Image 1 (cartoon, rainbow, N blue to C red):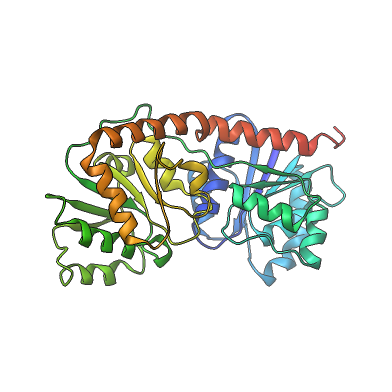
Image 2 (cartoon, rainbow, N blue to C red):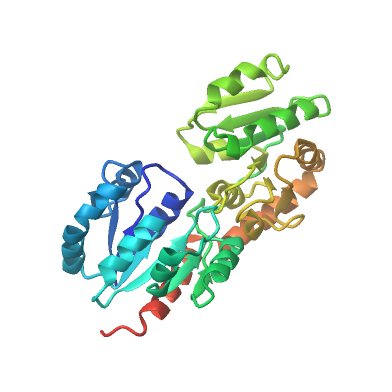
Length: 351
């Protein structure tokens, strides 16, 4: 099958990772795949690194001038499915598919709810299938566009062949960009509440971003030097995750697609995460991890403490999280569920 993905964000994001992971897996399984996006965006850089054929174009209003050329290139590639991953990409996909035997699929992996208006209803009416990355988004799409065909397809990720043993040391880990929505300040506050109760506590937050320097300055006044550590961008993600006993995803919002949650689960680490976005689809509270309300540092502190003081609970949740990832969130499930959507969306098209 010829598949065209369009992801035109100018930055890296969970939406971009969803699209890239899917496109790479489809290409690996023998489909002809092209990946289109904004010229010189980090998304296209990653697509090239994955070996995907890419095409870059101008974003925003200037991009409209390129639609005739894009239609020509699309006709040459002859996609069976055009999968749009943003709102602007969705409008472009409908334009490209007009008059061609190609199905339009719109994947929503962003935190914003679907918004019905004259334009979005018109575009939705020309769309063969919607894919929602989580349950909440699926409900939003169906509410906005009642006639739409909507399927929930959570992202799958590749992971290690085996889970690793939990280290004995009380090391709590977080891996995310340093952005307010990710909840670093909530975790730091929880660490300040927890340090006296857990001798040798270490909280390691890997990643980069605009808040990193400001939060670094706050550690000494808060008495957290030697307790909280910011190692920056780690060269070996899996080695970092393996060094931690517990994984934390304390986000205040967003997380429509929570890659970090799945990575902790894939390695067999118990997860403490906020009840936001798609995380409740991934983490079953008390079974594969622990969920807390976003912004509640006291609840976060108690959840982390419960896992540090009860090794059997931590190991049980870690094993269950790993089993859940294997069953529901691996690349096989991601690919196969998506292809079923594609097959249904193209069933009415001439061969």
